[in-house]
Image (tube, rainbow, N blue to C red; front, side):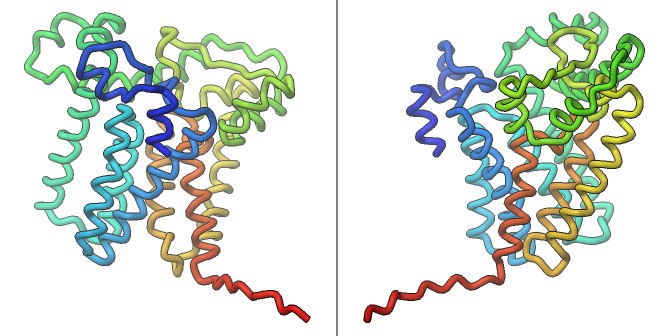
Length: 307
């Protein structure tokens, strides 16, 4: 499927970046609709293959796990890489139980390396100085000994909270829009993105501190629809979804650990945006539910008996 997308776009983003030629932006890359499903299945396979490796210690499975990151590198998709790494950390913690001091140091080192790579790929994708000039980084930081790649982490963590606060301060909700709240804040974006306009359902936005910082935690947009009632209702709705998913993928299922790890990452990354409705993430949970349901089912094909 990725090969089909490369043919469709006639471009491999990583090669275009390395060769310094114009290429397709990662935001526009891929075949519509197919791309969202493809990257979600890629992310699911990363998570589940690592869970299988941790339970079996089969090195062949570990090789599959590593190879599953290659498409993300080719299309320069940091989300797949970061989500895969963080999910793997939660799976690792599940299997090791108590984390020894030695392993704590390893996890800290892994986090530092991972966040550095996150910033490095960000610079590679957007241009070395773009993010620093656009966000007006002060001179003291630029001249400090702190690697500049870590600025991406600070920006990604601080700006959603700032956007949420800015929305609360400046957004006056005159009329509550419960339909828009349900449609845009509780349904997967693959649905709302494609059906919102035909159904004439207005999509409200948060109040950003600058136009290009687009996220405002999981709650900013819900506030735009219902005031403070939006965040409270969204919290309850998400909590119910979490319990429902854990009910559908019980502990005895081979996909339970994978499901818990994905849910854990969703809760962690809700500091950025409403992760439960992001297609590349919500569909991972769908795969867990579907495969958990069929894992013990036997499909028998019977030949028709002719008279």
